[in-house]
Length: 290
Image (cartoon, rainbow, N blue to C red):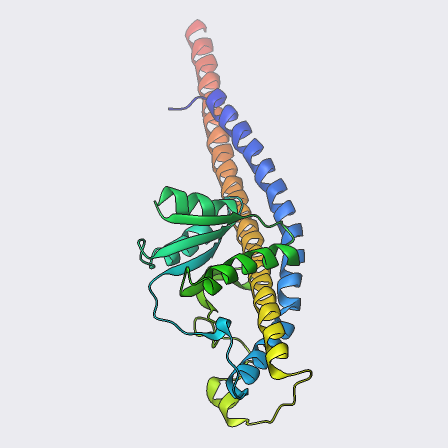
């Protein structure tokens, strides 16, 4: 049975842990708000760009581009986007579980985030490039990752590129997704709110006039489309990371507060029992002396 001294020591220890988790919760909450705003603000433009890409690539006449080429998949690249740190619940493990569906022999990995690179190395998968991205993702960071994946595809070192990351839904929900990156085409691994279906795109037959010409315009569009696509993925991943960490730290703080209450109650009960025992001993001694 624990003594009052042991209980006091435990209460002090848990109180110190609670102060740390509260501080981490406040930091994560501050970063979370900024990251969520950035992720949500870019979605209307991303949907518009995707709609332009589908209309342009499906209705353009006599246009071929290497980024649109669908090939038999012998080798695949996966852009795996994880967090830089832990303490964010099951966020990383859910994403990594999705990444394990790809054949280890025919898949190479491009990672963003330290945890993603550590997972690939630990699981014996082939890592061809490792990138870092900041707490506030910057467009040049996304452009560098997209350019590396694009070069692999154009050089025919891989026949397909997938993105495995986390889509931000809300503060409590983050969805791991595996979505198509290259060749450029329909995104099937994710439902885009407000985006037209392929049937709706095909039904709206519109004649386009491109200046200076369809080849120059669509080549420019495809390159920038991939950069912005990946930038939006990074924004969603970072919003998901900060949201999951804030919720995780809040749960840890609540658990620690509950433990402190239980330990304090036990301490008070034990202290009261000791006081009662001492009073009974005093009363008994006085009775014997009388």
